Structures are given as C-alpha cells and as structure tokens.
Image (cartoon, rainbow, N blue to C red; front, side):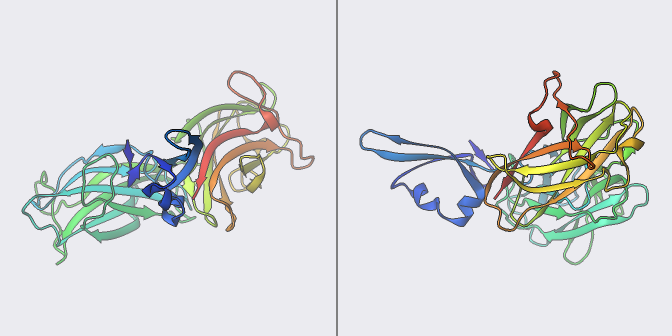
Length: 346
C-alpha cells in the first residue's frame, strides 16, 4: 500500500536496507515507529514496523478538474484543497495534478493560483510556478503535480473565497479555457472555501464533528465541531478552531483552554482565554447561537517528535474550576476535558 512519496508501512529488520535509513533525518520526519519485536527463525532478528505520517493533503479529497485549458501540452487532471475553510494563521494548501501529453513540450507553461474574495474580487493570495516534474503524488497519476501554500493574514475578512487556477505561456500570453466562447476567459474556478463568521444561527463547515456537552444540562454549551492540523514541526504555531453551540445561558464567564498533551498527559503547549479572541464572553451567548472560536497555540522549539493529543475544556477563571464535560452518551469525561485530535510533530 503506497501513500504519498513512499510506502505506508515499512518493516525494517537488522541488516536490511531500511534499517540503515532509520537514523536518516528525512525518514524520522516522515515515519513513526508503531511496533517492535524479535523473530527467532532462522536466527534472532529485531523487526521494527514504521508507519508513514500523513502529509498536508493526505486527508483531503482528490477531485477531478472542473475544466480544461486550450493547450495540447498539459492536462489538469485533478486538484486538492486541504480544508473547506480558511483560517487566519493556518496554512491552506492547494495541490494541482497536471499531466503532460506525450510528444508535446510543456516547459514553457506557467500555472497561476489565486484565492479571491467572492464579494469584492480582491486577491488575497496569488502565486505562480512553472510546470515541471515534481514527484508529488496523491492517488492520481500525475508527473507535473504542484503544491501551493497560502497562510491567511490576521485581517482576512469573513466570507466566501474562490480558489482559481490559470495557465499562461512564459511570454505572458494567457491560455483560455477550452470550453470558453472567447479568448478572454482564462480563469478556472476550482471551488469555494469560507472564513466563517464568529457567530451565526446555523453551523458553519468544520472538518470534524463531535458531541461534547460542558456545564449543567439545560444551561451549558455544546462543542459540535473543530478544525485542527494533522501535523506540524517544533517551533511552529497551530490554530485550533472550535465550533460551540449555546444550549442554554451560562451565569459565569468561562475561559477556554486548549492543551497539547504528550502520551503521559503532560501539557507541553497551551492556549487559554475568553472565546473569540477575548471579544465574546460566554455570558453573552444567546441560546441557539453557533460560535466559531479560534485558538492559536505556539509549539516549543525543542518539542520532541511524536504524537500529541489536543484537549479542550472550559473553566471559571476566578476559581480555576472546570465545567463538567460529558460525551454524547452522557458519560462524564476524565479531567472534564475533551480529547479531540492527534497532532503529529515531525
């Protein structure tokens, strides 16, 4: 089974080629050990099983290109968007899967990607790259795959954004869409993503759905969804986005904690504060509202590689007491904290 740039699982035994690669930095960054044991036949050999870590787009859906460009040198076969939402400070990845046409020269082609605010037409991100063999794969046969990363700024307005791709020659001449009636139609809209409003009466899109209740029944809040990155490197910042639903009035302003915990439960990084960057205390929440609440967390520069758990909860900042937390079946959660995601630090 193959995923990304190498096999999903590697079984390394003493004296094998893979055993010599275990200490290489690239291998340590791409794989984690999941099991080790000793085999006794024909002699005692130590075996170690490694699993490949997910890439930035490994969990995103690969979709067929919605159109084609009027050139016989390259074909846009598919694309990936790393998330249905864009979050300030959180990298958003666009992957394009091109393929060349045998006997045709694609080396003079340049792809352009831009992320445009739908309401105003303003470009918040625009970049370009030559078509060239890349080695990127993702479940699609494509030699000329490209990856573009957009980190939205803090002042990114809430709203809908279009992800657009264009193709041009190095001379600057744009290549129109093959289905266009005029040569002026050169932009291919791949899809739309959103920066959801902080407060709404309907739930916005989230990558993961959960069912956790905090506080007393009838006057607490529900955690119904979240967005979280799959992996980061030591020293980087991550953004955990939470979607709350006010199921009743809270009499005391509660603060949110977001903990990054190691396998022993030790907190290695955290973020605490009033929801919505301090601007929307829980006593102001109206029953039935959905509140999108983003929390940036800085990872220590010396954080060891490995898997960490993202845990979330609410507490009274005056006393430090946590609101009781219950799962969807009504069972109380340990430490009154909801364990949401696994973060791979590599």
